[in-house]
Length: 299
Image 1: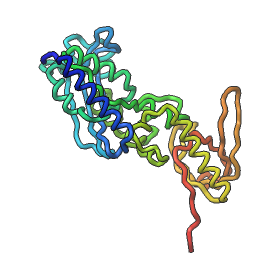
Image 2: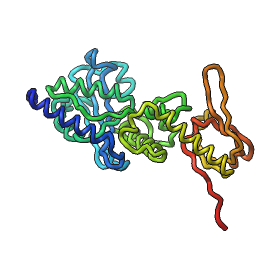
Image 3: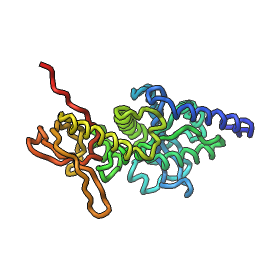
Image 4: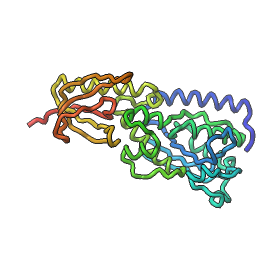
């Protein structure tokens, strides 16, 4: 692949900057997202490790519209540690294209899209390194980290490996540590996270990148809980249980909302009668993933 001239880099930079500004204000349903996953020979491109497989899934309005996947000749051995995780052997890589051989095709696949990855700094560091090694400029796409979203939207979960988050969210398709399959799992998680944010009036690309989502969504939940208390109506909640790390739907007749403090930790709890448990229960507000007032039916 030929070397890109300085003027071409400047033009690409200006186009990417303008494109990113446009993406920030766009509704998530109006933007193409490409969910990316890479398998590698080791843990760090700075240590000479390379990509040995790429998988990518293109989403439009949460629907899968295209996919891209290939093994990649890393031009170096896969480490024993990496092989133990991804199972990619030398025989599997025999005859695979180098990254330089697929860089143009992959660039076209991600062009104009917002990139998504689970633990994005890891995947993006390898992709940037591979593009530079191939003589191309690194992609300047806007990047969303699905792991960062999981930590904010599922703040009561505690552990955030991809397979744990997928299980909690009810995704039966297992994490296999193969690029295309894992990209598909991340795509499903991302679609769920986007839906959660849209339900709380956070529907733009910029909202996906906010670092204050946990606090903002918690304030919205408290507002809905207080509305239910004031109007003396029931609440439907989707709750992340801290004991078994499962998400359940509940109908709750709220009685009060109280603040508790244990050491430095401060939390708000909804107290009310849980109709599924048939008894009074406490629900930590930051573990309520969704909440809606249940209006009485009209006879």
